Length: 98
Image (cartoon, rainbow, N blue to C red; front, side, top):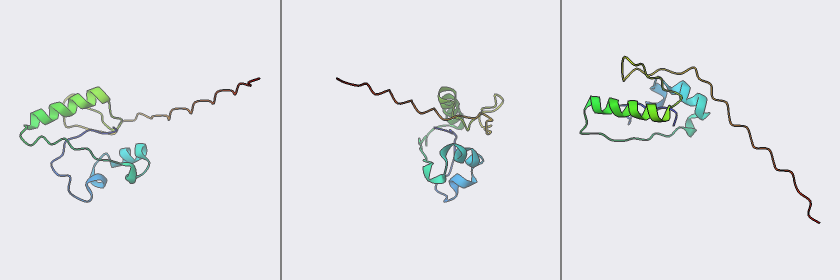
């Protein structure tokens, strides 16, 4: 998970590319084909309830493309955090069997 947000419409073909966070998403996903959208419908919820859930998920999982401004639940900006890839484990030395 690299980003959490709230949206009214997701059907538009350019939903990904028009999002303010698209460049951040690509920097972590590598290419658009690696991006996946997950939707949690909250049709009967209030804006406040949706904002509260977004804030809770961000606090728990700390997505790299989110930064919450304490003054507003809806203020998201690209973080300056750089994530280095995990190093590959070194192969274990082969042991000789007699």
